[in-house]
Length: 236
Image (cartoon, rainbow, N blue to C red; front, side, top):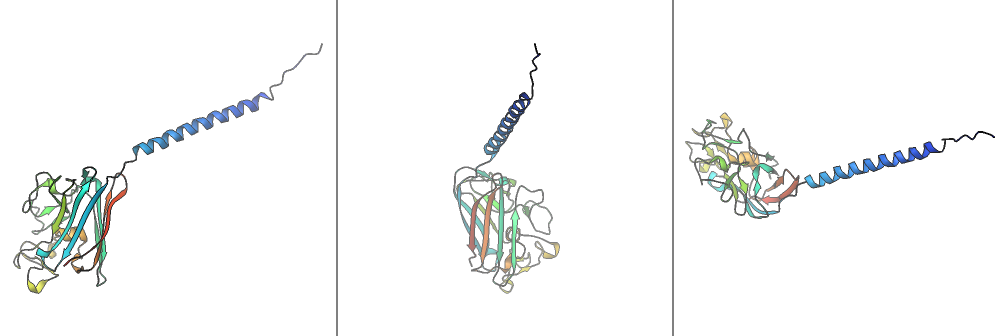
């Protein structure tokens, strides 16, 4: 009687196919888990509405930046925001600035950059709801610095150009120096002083005239979404 031999040649391909299926299933599961984790970790941008006004009449008293929150779905910490401005003036000058916070190097400093509380802060300042223990003028509190306050309905992000009189220096402090900065005892371009309008719109912002357009964008950093964007016409 002849001895029967069982061959395993047909077994190996089956095992190979099964292993490929197992590996494919494992890879699919890993990819699915990773994608699901990414979807869960992606943050949703808050919904908010704002009103923005930029003015420049050539003097410190009539030049300001205002970005006011009219309503929001939730409180928005300014540490999670990036403010971007850009523009081209009618005379061809271009400028702008990008601001995040909080910052160990405040973007606003004058009085010869001595570092006193009333002359060193991070613009734009916050006023009203969400700004903590805020004050209207003078020695602004640290809770008002951009990056430290939270945007809520009614929160105003506001600053104006520095100036008082010819002795102190600043922007448009005399009828003959409209649309110009002049040096004085508390503001000096020679010392690289920087007021809030320079910080928010760029150091050459004074080239802007009524009718010029400034692009203002507010981005929510965690989600990467823009929550406010508008071309703002400069007022006089």
